Image (cartoon, rainbow over all chains, first blue to last red):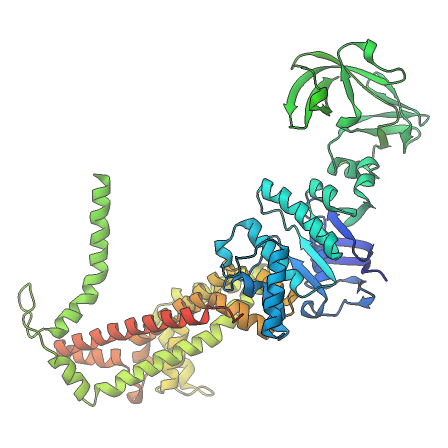
Length: 356
Length: 263
């Protein structure tokens, strides 16, 4: 049985169509991320699954049970909110035990479970603190423990890391994923952060203007984006506007590139170049045969830690090239360089598909 | 230098607030006050008040009216603030302004006249009764309660807290009982204090809608000011004591209600 089935979901707020024909099936234990810019409808989908919004059209099945008309308090889902939403009048233990208190479970059972959950989110010893005495990361751990306390069949995470510092965010990202795999809990995660999506998910659903653009594994989404929007939103890319000839040659300004993966045969087209697909050298001799070659001038070198990103001006366009830091050998701003790429890498899309 | 001037201004402001309150209290304990410093210490004025059968009922009445007006106000305003907080768009802004500002714009005289009109004709021919006074006071205090409760609801992000609670299985009643009310109680209490104090000291509107059977303490005070200024001072002092006591009780209740549940 599918853990979650959302079938042809539609939802509008006034004149704004927030979600249009959203369909998704989730396997039990799967971690699926809804990814997109703000206003793309991802949060609306999550809130409809939680029961906070009513679908205009379409069905939601939670473990086979049609749930459209089940109020949120009766749904078998746990939710974690962006701003934690801890109850300020309650201690950590009271917050976590809330769902068990509502269900009138016996005190000793509650105590035991709260202890287990605190251990699970590594907050043992903080049970008597109040939310305002905790850091952001700790608050979100409490919120996670609280959502897990009722043993929900599906865990819903609404941008749970957005309000946290970069360092805590990265750490918690890994912890949530490990926890999710350990418990095997089906999880629907909403974020606008492509890095979170890529690192945490089994599958990613990329959305734009309420419409699903692409569903796939992180690898598929990154390596094989279905349109320029996905390519632009997930990962970094340079875009070249040009023309396709016979589905084999991409003409950009007065350059001609050989390409193997084009969705256009003839006519105006958009080429996507990932910075990692491009290589950079000083002399033409070092370029392998069969590569597409461009000449340019380095305009900026940025050191990103494990990689170095070089901005190269080629025919008044800025193109990004990335290489591992250890392979970087002292290009400087102003250097004349040769940039080349294999015909296997770039994707070419029809021009009418916009990247925004 | 600048700091010094600011300090002086601050203390002048404090005096400006405290002196008018302290004067009648000091006056109510003194035998005579002709020069700059009051003379002697006496409890006579209070003895007179508590032995005179005219004053005691009006004190009790005032307490009853103020408590009832506060309760009525809570019952009306908390749900109203909750509802307005849940609304979206222009209607919400309009209602928010209505509750917050409108009752403050109209002078009490106008409110009194309006109430008088409403209370003299059926179906609400209750003019002169204690009920009329309670309703009038509850109305006068409404914007103050609304502001406080509404601000609390906004501060705690009531919507999200309610959603969190409902996703944890709490129904509307449980959400109110365990989450919303305990977290807006500071707002309700400070609102209550204001409503209570307004009601307890209210004169203008009360003088219009009250009858012989509903003479509250301020009404008696007004009469007494012409007869015996010393007794009037003692009555004023009592008004201050009661308001302070109410304040302390409310703070105490607040600290009790806000606690979570037992784990």
